[in-house]
Image (cartoon, rainbow, N blue to C red):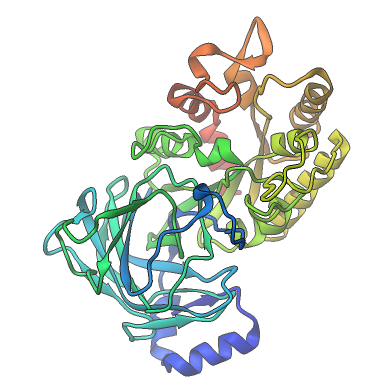
Length: 422
C-alpha cells in the first residue's frame, strides 16, 4: 500500500493500523504505476440553506457504485481514495471493482475485492488519501468499470467532483458490493465521491493530465457518452497507435487559476501539486484556465450561497504570473506543461481585451513547453470573440460535443509525446 499526501503523523498511524509488511512495499516497488483514470475533488458548501444542486445523496450504511472508464490497459490496478476536505474519518467496510454491464449492473464473475494492507475495511483520516493494494484484474482501456464501496453507518458526503457527466448509483441499505444486478441501486447521482483515481501497472507508459475549468471538465457534453475533449484526446492517441498514453481529466467546473471558491474548489495554482504532480506516471499536463478569473469579478454578489465569491478582479499580468507558478512547480517535478489559449466566450470589450492579451502571451512567450491553440480551433472566423455555431453548446461559452472533438483534434499529440520523453 502506498500512502501519499499525508502528514507524517497520519502516515505513521495508518501504517501501524494496517500492519503493512515490508514485502508489500517490495512488490509494489517493482511495478510501474500510471494513472489511467482520475478526477479532482471540491468541497461541498456546508450550509443549512443549500440549493438542491449542492445537496449530496444520503449514503450512510449503503453501497455507492461509481462508473469509470480507464484510458490505459493493464493486468493489475490500484484504487485511489481521498478524504480530502473531510472532517471525520472516511469508513469503507468493503470495496470491489468489476467490469460494468451497463447502468448499475456488473458483469458476473468479474467482481474482485479490493484490500488495503491486506484488510477489506479501511478508515481514512480527515484530509488523507491512499492507494489500495494491487488488484489482479484485467483492465481494458475504454471499457467501463463499476467500483462499489459499502460505507459506514455514519458516513456523509462533504466533498465531491460535482460535474461528472456520468450517472453513478447508491443502493438500498446494506452491503451490495458483490451484486451484479442493478436492482438494489435505485438512487442516481451525477457526481464522483471519494474515488479519485485508478492506476494500472503499465511498463513503458505515461499519462497526460488535462487540468482546468468547466471546459476541460466537459460541462454540457452528452451524459454518459464520454464526449469531453480529454476523452476524445484519449481516443485520438489510441487511434494514432500511441496506446501507451493515458489521458486523465482533472478539470473542475467553475474553477479559477488564482482564487478559491465556496463551490468550485481551490485555486488551480494551489491544487496543481495534488491533482496533477502527485499522480503516478504523469509526464505532461495540458492547462486551460483563466476565463472564470476574468468573468467572476463582474458577477453580481448574491445573498446566501455565492459560488462566485470572491469577486476578484484580475489583469492579464495576474494570470500570466499564475501560469508561471504552475510552470515552475511542474518543472521541479520533470512534468511538461502545454499552455492552452482561452476559448471565445462572447465577452464584453474590457474582459475580451484581457483574454486576447493572455492568449498573445501564451502563443508568443515560450513560457510553456508547448501551446495548444483551442481559441483558433473554436472561434468563428467572422466574429473571433464568439464560438463557431457548430461548436457552441448554446450558452456561448461551453463547446458542444462537436466543439470538444475539435479541441482534441487541436492538440499536437506528437509534440506532447516527444516533449514528455525528453
